[in-house]
Image 1 (cartoon, helix red, strand yellow):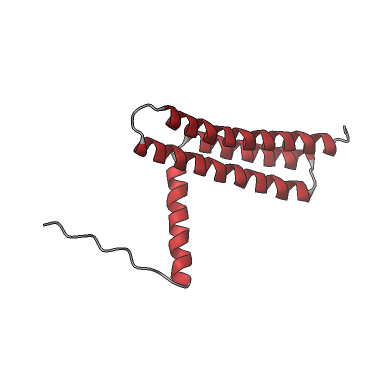
Image 2 (cartoon, one colour):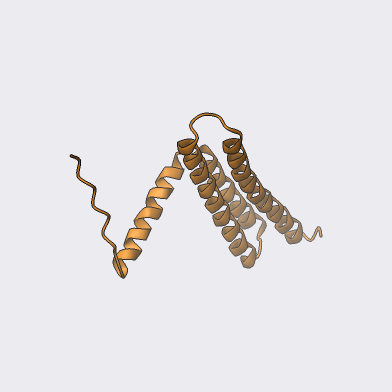
Length: 129
């Protein structure tokens, strides 16, 4: 007769913070294998380098960093959706396709937001608008 596994111990206080940080670190390690995640990091770095080259104002950098982090968070959620869908529905299904398409659309919207913002900052910095 197989033994029931023991539930994980509940952690409190500072140990909880370290546990949560380790979960986040493992999430980043998982995302590092995703081509889209690496491309989004590269694009974010490009946007920040562009802002530095054109002399964009500090508040634009801060907003760009927030948008980039939000894009990475949406990518993480999209990857989680894909992982769960693949587990629950290993064969092709319309519902699985819809779930994955919607996650991809969310990432696309964030990428467009980053691009539009980068264009706006560039135009404003050069007084073209």
